[in-house]
Length: 266
Image (cartoon, one colour):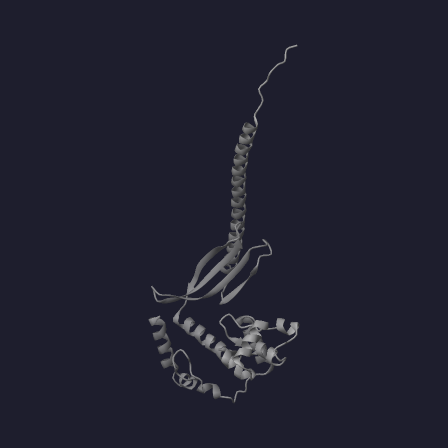
């Protein structure tokens, strides 16, 4: 009998082959993962752009626009957040005021980093008469909100009859300030009336935005209007021009002249 001799693979050759195959497989997995992430990011980017475009088209189709700032989570595409802002904008080159609309969306890409899509449109320029009307309306809104918020923790502490450190403790417990750092009187009353430990349902009923504060003030005005005989507000000083409201009423031309000078300097 003849025994055939066939040469097989040695252990070193098998190990080397497995190492090469492992490097090749890992490289392929990296490429596949990158392609998958790129495809997912592209899809999210297109969806985010679609939402921003739809929001802008809604604004452009309206007969008139008013100042607004709103946002939320998309119902059509989960994971995408949207924001729409319409407001006045001072254009320094031409020294003119414009109404500008900004529709933006945010989403987290495959790497967990926040990405933003933003569309901007200049709706229209504002005439001098429209500008004065807007400023007058803003001033009235500020007058209505006077006394409804506390600018500093010290002011809030004086109103509540506690130390400033106590206000800071209440903030840690859930007292909600507004975005500009002011503390609404409504929120402070909730904690002051409950010795700093209000029930959960009252904590959730706090005012969190300027829009909610204005809405509450409008409801209050409807229930408890200010007496027409109260003219103490005429002695209040306008922070922009330094004139009292009484002086503004008596000499509006001087007031608007100062306002336009301030805008021109800006």
